[in-house]
Length: 433
Image 1 (spheres, rainbow, N blue to C red):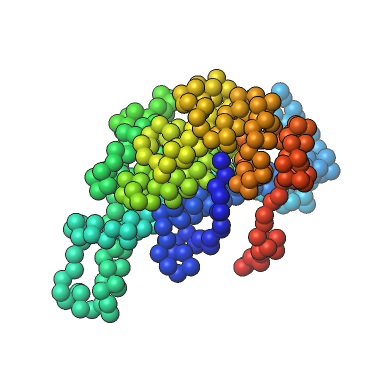
Image 2 (tube, helix red, strand yellow):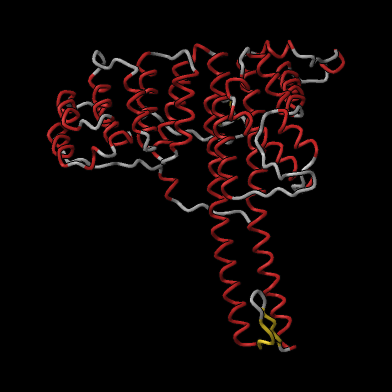
């Protein structure tokens, strides 16, 4: 169900919003935007590089037609004689092709490194936001200042900021396992156990990132040991000294892993740490999963909605809980798992619920006749109008003649999907060079 009254904010992704402290929700939103941009950038970079590689191959083929003579040929290899005056041009074309091939192999690797780097920065900002929310946590750490150090600061706030920076620096230099143990002990949550499979995937991605940074991707004893200790399945043929690669598919899996664990981490701690912000937390998670369904990222939407419906035990209201249930059923249905969708709906009694929830259940059950009757019963309603336009739930219903006829009858106007776009997004942005 789409979030009502949502408005955009300018997020710098550096822990500050327009020069002021930001909330946990803002940090989650900024983090998602950053890793989404990396995913998009990789896809575009690979497409451009592949196009360049194809053009170079065409140029080489054209060169051989004009300036090379076939000398000998076998089943797997051909030998050509090239006129001396054209040798330099061929060597140049060959270098271009080799560079394009190397770029195609390095791009996914570089973007996996960037993914984990963004997670590191996000974790630092998340911890900062938590300390700002509850500064007494800082007094529990071993971080302290002597009187001589203290009097060097212009204000108490400056001293607090220095101590906070030092504490975050200490935490960020821990291993990821140590960081999560610290988070579990500090906030009283069981993250690694609850995250289970995604935790193992996260460990493998971060360890592989370390191999690329420190060993150019060459497998080490440490990598194999960590994988074994965490029950991470790897190809039995992989051994010390082998070089790991990153395919576009692996990058997509790493992106999904970093996205999922980043959102789950924030929400698990946020809800435990700030129970008075359940309404904000529910709204944030509902918005994230709604957008994922709208974008067709059903695998990720399912993972987060399973978390919302099965792991979380407190919600702002029964209405928000049922919204998660409905969106979870929708994600499975749109992922062509209609049987699971039906099982999810059957676990709740919807008969005593509001008409809008009964309408959602009718659509998910493909009972469009009942859905039309419920539309007429609900009548003109601004909130419901937004749902008709934006909620992916109505995607198939919107295609029917009866929906358009009923909508026009209710609202006295033809149905049109309206996209609200900020003016600045329509203007081209200059790039600093």
